[in-house]
Image (cartoon, rainbow, N blue to C red; front, side, top):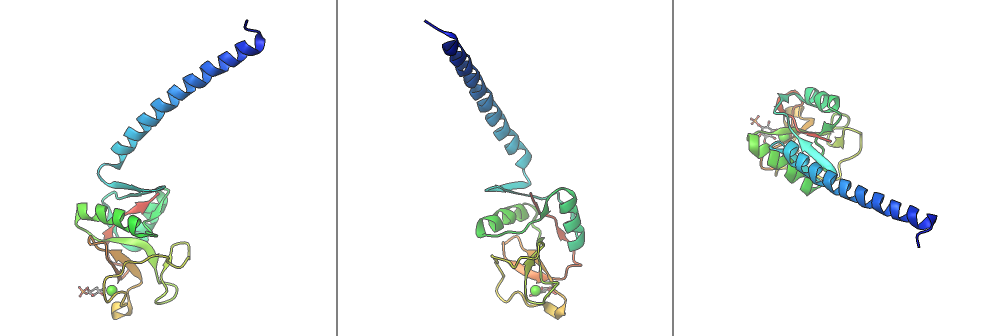
Length: 160
Ligand code: IPD
Ligand code: CA
């Protein structure tokens, strides 16, 4: 017969149902915006987003620009992340610098936070520290890595 408790429960049910509809609409709209914003220069892997702006510069310049944008230089931690970066490089037919180097200790490659790398995809014969001056890591559009002088100019790929 609808006492006060019943009326409050029914009100809450309508409110939940309204919110469910609004959430579904928001999810579908967000999913579309993601598609748009990832086109053509972005890739999503799990919780990570890789993106280039097309800018080219030396390692310090790329590192600064990614960090300025609220991200950091791409630092692939597994094959799926490396493949996503590679897909972006194929679009430009260029190589990029990763957020990895052995500036501190020759031969010990680390992420920008100082952690030792947990994944690598070196080209055969690399890293070779050619002429003793190669402390940064470029990734070719083949996905393979080469140590290279940090002063060279490469494509920017940031992760967020
Ligand atoms: C070099 C070679 C080498 C690689 C170096 C590159 P270069 O290019 O590709 O195999 O290890 O990092 O600089 O100097 O012969 O044009
Ligand atoms: Ca090399």
